[in-house]
Length: 145
Ligand SMILES: [Zn+2]
Image (tube, rainbow, N blue to C red):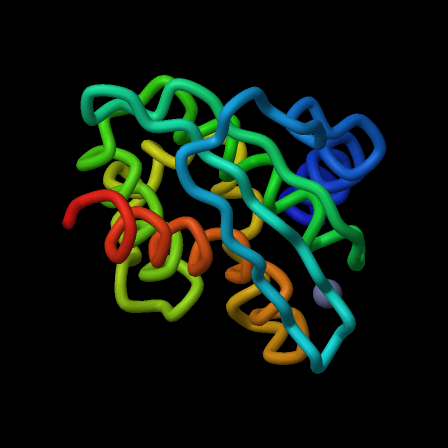
């Protein structure tokens, strides 16, 4: 019960007041992420300079979970070296898949740990992982090469 309340509050907060739902200046990489099973459709923009994610933003629409998860993801990766950003994406995806369960390891995800229970709601998993998968692809395919 208690965990659920925290989860709802955080999701609500990020969904109602997404800090990162904005256009950024001169993005170095832009990618669209779509989850047809729910209708979530986001476009992520990242600015990477000297191996550091210096800015990021998103646009698009979708359910509360996908929007909140996208906002949380950007909060976590902006200001991080790309290696750390990639690590956080992998950590989040591992948490949702249930392959990473260590609390201490997962605490690196900060607010996003609130989405942990989504792993027990199969219909919402794709909503939660959409932004993280997209960012992971952006970092892997477009930046590190
Ligand atoms: Zn959704």
